[in-house]
Length: 248
Image (tube, rainbow, N blue to C red; front, side, top):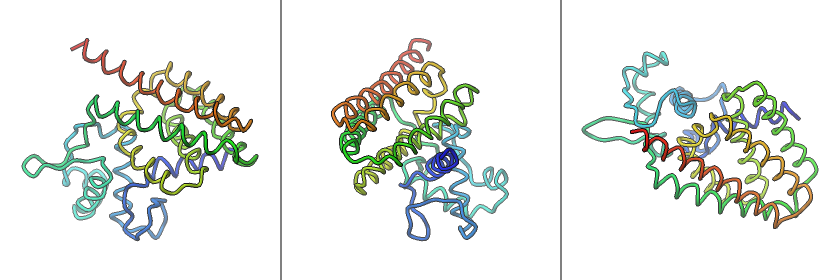
């Protein structure tokens, strides 16, 4: 079960589904048959989501071609895919940048997320299977180990996988595609909150409560806990912005 959870985490962090696959699929699994531009797109995605390429940072084809050991053509194609995914922004006269999410836009994204995840909790609770509960608990076990080790790089993708799986388990393709499209943008913001130990601790406790409510089939409680959980993330995001503003 822990291996399954780990694979789920790797798939989600590597593959925000909004990024269009060159073969027509929405899945970005790393596979041997993947084209070079697709593989480059995934590598750039990892650099963005791991905060190695930061919001507002200018990206150049030449520098990234050297860094990744490829020609500039695949870099250019990867830029187009990630711009469509909402992670990059191009300016004809200035170049290509990692997209900057404003505080106001961030608040709007979190508000939308709270609605989607609350709905997912309510819909999933009455029909969740024992196997699905076990899978979610497996993800939480991995998160606990990473928290104990203070390993943010391990904790973050597991956190993403946990939320993604809950929405996916509902079995509503439109809900899932909308959620994943929105999460592409939230990924640019959310890692910073996870890096704070207090945020990880609160998040971990709330995850356990959510799974307990789902396992009990308590739709109303699952809905409430999911909404509370995301609103808490939103409030921590706002607090960080206020701290930055007061320090300037």
